[in-house]
Length: 431
Image (cartoon, rainbow, N blue to C red; front, side, top):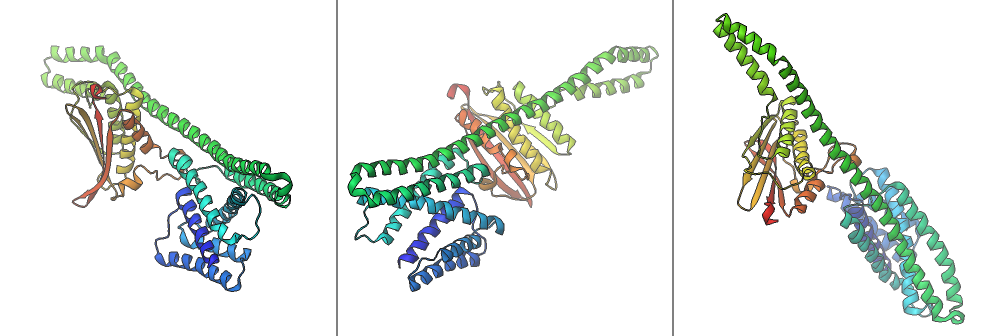
């Protein structure tokens, strides 16, 4: 029975680490999942029947069970399962030593060590859970994001600690009467330190990732600002050209009027009017910074033959800083343009609504299909995931900064899919 419990404990730990740490999902076909569970139980029954704990059987069921359970490339699952099996074995060793040092001072006389393993598994799981809650989930960084060199460093680090403690523990166990409890207190503290060093290594890896993300986000913001600046610069050059030729236009009009060519003069005026209209801001929201962003993305949409509709107007300038307005609306509209290009009839709506206490910004776009908005909101479809996909976090950060709220949903009307994001921001005097 102990072998079956041992396998189940290991199995649950593997599933927890791979699903929550590496963000892999179970297979869609339940048959594979059932085969995975059956493989693990059969291995436990085999060990129980022959009363052995064969390393070969352990490695076989671990690797095969994980490969059957998760949806991922087979080669990657084999490597991942082998690495996790090795690392969890190291942490389990630390956990067993901790229990032995604390509860029996290193002596093992008259104690069934087999049942101790289940307590060790619980302690190991507690370590993994704390890593997940305090490091991974808290920073929205997962093991799949960590560079290979840090993962390899954890394996090497754990191996060195395990070899050292195995040797020292045997020495203490054989000489505990000579050294007394003080030696075991030192041993206990050193093992806690070894586990803490694993947290430090992971913390360093996560800090490196967060720094990299921050730099990428800043670069993304600077790129958006540059694109908007280039657009304004282009408009400014065109305006200067128009003004330079304005004297000539007026002279041509004067000559047409002197010759009493009224119809020709009207046509010339209409031509000049159209030229000047091209330089004017098509969208005026009531906020200068927002005008620049909206007109820039209207310009991009126009180039892609996307209908861009804006309704509503603000009666006063928003209290958001320029950086935050660019981050919020730039990310929303950039993703809207990218998504709606794939739709049969591309279209983007922007609505500005003022209430007494809040400002509502609603952005919608036609989409190729309905999506699960909560799960796939701004998850990048670009192959270079490491350098893209910051939109959701940046939007959420700006909304949180101003104590607002946002809601996303995907809908379908008359067979056409749409994606919507609604942002509510308190007015400045209500923040």
